[in-house]
Amino acid sequence: MRKAQCVFAFSVAALAVSTIPAMSGTRAGRWTPDLPASVAAKASPLTNATVQPAPPQASSKDAAGADKDNDKTQDAGDGPAATEDKPATPVTWSPSEIADAQARCAVILKRIQAVSIAHAPIREGACGAPAPIELVSIGKNPEVVLSPTAIVTCEMAEGLYTWMKGDVQPLAKQHLGADVIKIETMSDYACRNAYGRKGNKLSEHGRANALDIRGFVTATAKTAYVLENWGKPQREINAEIAAAKAAEEKRVATIQAAEKAAQANQQTAKAGSKPAAATPPSSTASAQGAPAAGIAKSSVVAGTPRLTVTLPGAQTPAALSLAPDKLGGPKPKPPAFQPQDFLRAVHASACRIFGTTLGPEANADHRNHLHIDMAERKATKICD
Image 1 (cartoon, one colour):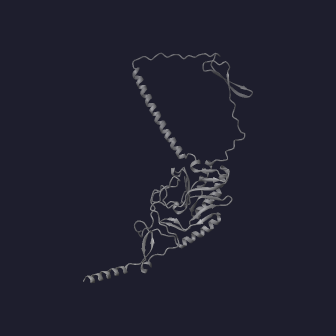
Image 2 (cartoon, one colour):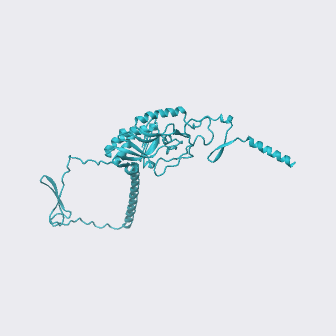
Image 3 (tube, rainbow, N blue to C red):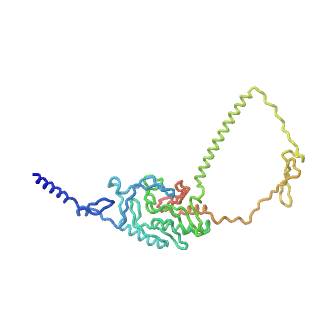
């Protein structure tokens, strides 16, 4: 009887093992079963695009300084299943989207004489670009390098080239005395939401369509950094003026209240008493016969107006010559190196090219860099 039970148990175990699909390969330390052919046939094939999982939440930038994140960027594969009213974000770019973007890139990069490294398509939920590049330098004579290199779209690279050639280089010669040969960058592609925007609006950094710039370096090794050379933003000056005005108003109000209280006390103390007789004014004569305050006489000596002041007790008069201001003549030349004027001028010029231009005047989070991006604006471009 015991032998029969053992045989039966062994047969059931063998049958259970035979129904388990074969295990092959590992991923992150876990075995992955081979799917049956009928199940595998239902899976959608992926294109040759690189698929990267979206981060649960992009972290805030450190003191190096780019825009902060306030909201989460949700991947299409996270959370509840997408409904028919709101389809899920594709996990990859289509072959036609990749081909079109790569074709545009080839034309743009040749036109702007760029040195770049092609990257595989990026798709992280709603973030990414079908043909991103790692931009090393743009232009020739001078060649402007990016340090560190930046992951951007070719359209962003072209906007940067147009800005550098048409505005930045002429302004650099005017205010810095030499061409710019290096752009020091801070932030490029990053899957995150726009700073301070409601509704989980995706930042242009999440489309590889933005760049944060710390400053510029010239061919003569001079630097123009936003944090060090922009100067105090007008918004900070206005805040200081408002604070000083409020403090002064408070001080005056305190003094007036004290004086009013003192007058009330004096009136109470003098009630019923007669006021003291007024003392007539008196003056003291000086050695020269003039009043103690002295006497001033004007005269003209050799065509130059002179003011003679007689001081009390003085043996000889002290003469003060007041020469008229010289009008005309050569004006002093401005210094060749004016980084503040340069930075403010290039910021203003960027507003004509890019969809968004932000700097120290925008808010404290842009105190140390310029943000530029190629966002399409239906009405007015953002320039702060």
